[in-house]
Length: 219
Image (cartoon, rainbow, N blue to C red; front, side, top):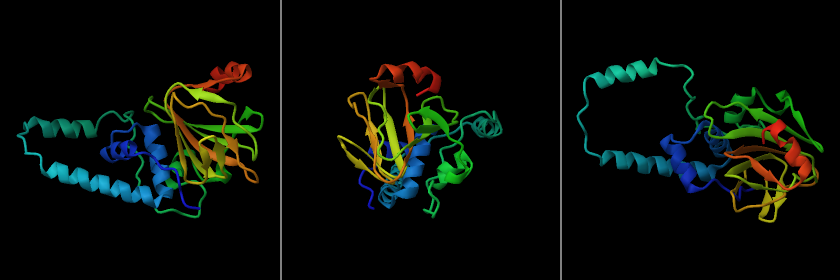
């Protein structure tokens, strides 16, 4: 099935420039591994960036700058990791390569944690502090509790599908939601929906039960 919902141009340009935080880079790289259309768009953005660099006049650099650069490269290993590479050829694996590198394998290797009402998740450790990434597994035909958003949320479908009032999302599709969006995603019939979700602020659940457990699960 052709991917219908893509990451936006601002994210592509930021990814090409290396300015995205680790969590967002992971989602963008995972989408790129599944989406030929966005890979072509990224190549165009990188080409444009290279052309712009060629128009910039050279500046003089102090001799000490090279030594400082070498010291930085050999410096603190706790610095955030570089964004995952987008140069990934799609494989028969369910999870795209950038994501497999983070979770230690494909679906069969995953150890899910129960969230409730048949929904499971796996928090993904990143070191940027600017977003939270997790895998979600929602049973076929079941909803995620209704919620709005305290910031931005990107959701990449990996298996199955889900739908909201904004349309249906299948493998490779990305739903973008922000403070203006309130929805209740429902997994499609016949197959569990597994997604990669990244947020930069807590969700705002409508039900009291969801709000009570929210601090415990960190969503």
